[in-house]
Length: 247
Ligand SMILES: Cc1cc2nc3c(=O)[nH]c(=O)nc-3n(C[C@H](O)[C@H](O)[C@H](O)COP(=O)(O)O)c2cc1C
Image (cartoon, rainbow, N blue to C red; front, side):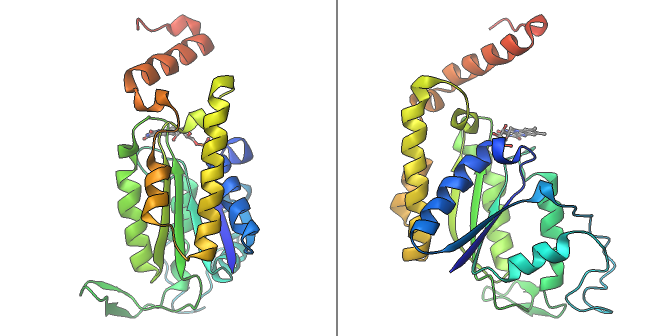
């Protein structure tokens, strides 16, 4: 099984998203998958111009010249694709949206009704067949992923894929903050992510039990929003003392 993660954080390997992707892929590799991590921000991805030449003049191929042809080849060579993005303004980052728009050459222009009777484009590719979503956000609650939860359901429907796992981490900054007392919790979460990576290879999807464990607070501070707010505000005050907050 081949798994490719497309990570759209501009912070790349310094980012919180990367901690999640790295551990997840390590678990998948341990279970025998061939894995690859791609940082979208290392690549030039121009915005889709909506010309539809990928459906007419050059079927399956975009007329824009940038790195997307190579990324599309990696996408189509994967059994499972991981969409990994931090939450930006309640959504995925701009580079991820550009990447998603530029996946349009993989669709067949003809439309059909899906099993629920809703219209979509016909399937025009054998692979990928499965999607995993990975994200983290700055606010502590898990509620900040509601747009992404819906987005990835729609993506899976549009791409004729199965959404086999969603891994969302509120309070994502806790993954990389240099706070020694958080290390055991971050390491335990890393082990859970590796289990999740192994599970998508061995069982084909994440179990409800694994998802429930992944949704649990990383550390007590994530569950206590007032404490989280106070610590984060202190951190910003330390970095910008002239704007010191009253709390
Ligand atoms: C432009 C921008 C918009 C953001 N919007 C949100 C948001 O809507 N909700 C949220 O909880 N965090 C938001 N964040 C915080 C990021 O999700 C958070 O810092 C995350 O840990 C970044 O992941 P990374 O280190 O992998 O880049 C935003 C950050 C930036 C830079």
